[in-house]
Image (cartoon, rainbow, N blue to C red; front, side, top):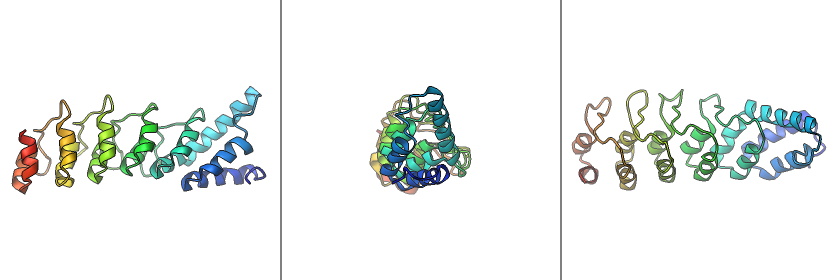
Length: 219
């Protein structure tokens, strides 16, 4: 068990358990070792919560948890007051961006209940949005989920000028369900010029011979 571990060792085990998806160990540490839900002394509880929040924020383990789709652990971490849900790891990934880029739709649904910016731009990936990155990777369930989110900007371009629809045309032109999902959105801008190509999506699809995409764009 984890109850007899020293504080420093327990901290290291906690971070490793989060990364490895060991919800049983994370739960044992929180409830039995640190007794998060049993402490009655308000000052002691406040100190423990701050220590745990600092540990989670500094280790950035919530990003790894979201990346791996460890939903049970994610929910436990979010119960700790003081968590910075928008904290980025050294690669510039937030928990939200990490869940989207790795196709973890269940983790995404949990994070969408939190105060996150669904239009955040990745500071180390040319300002790409999570919607564009998920589109580039073909994560259709993530795309569908994000397109239903109130406030999502479906036309938000990265630093080079590529929009989510542009990414769909370049990387997922054989996945018509993705193309149709974007075209069904009210306000989607189908005539934004594609950087480097100097063409609209329709012109690009015609040039590349994407007949089904052309038909979809003309509907």
